[in-house]
Every structure is written in C-alpha cells, then in structure tokens.
Image (cartoon, rainbow, N blue to C red; front, side, top):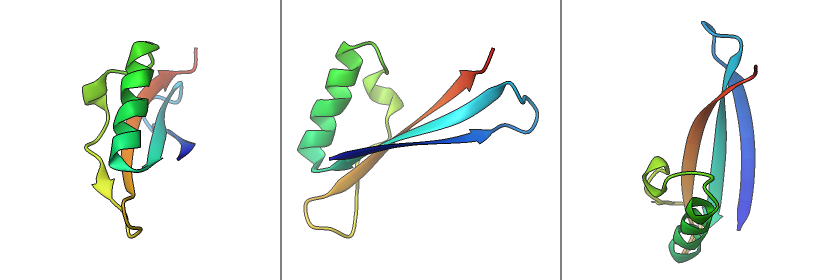
Length: 71
C-alpha cells in the first residue's frame, strides 16, 4: 500500500493550504489503515472518500483532503 501527500495553496488565504493524503491498496487494507489513523486521532473515518476501484485488480484508492494553517 502506498501513501502520498500533495499540497496546494488557496488563492484567497495564502496562510492556508490544502493537503491531500491518498491511500492505495486493497479495499480491506485501506479500511484497516483509515481505522488505525482514526485511533491515532489523525482523521475521522468519514473524512476519507469512499474507496474507488483503480485499473488494477483488487486495488482501490481513498483520499483525505485537509486544510492546514501555516501559522
């Protein structure tokens, strides 16, 4: 399973950025990691997108978008 992070700056508020966290793997593994991250108080389970299938067999992707203050 891989995890990647990308950032973009919001035009109206330069001190706030959107951060995208992606999980790629089997739907079962994605769900397990999302629940583990919830247990670590990293994110709420419902903040993640529903796992969507990729072109690879038994592989899905789920995304979390979080706005972060740079103060």
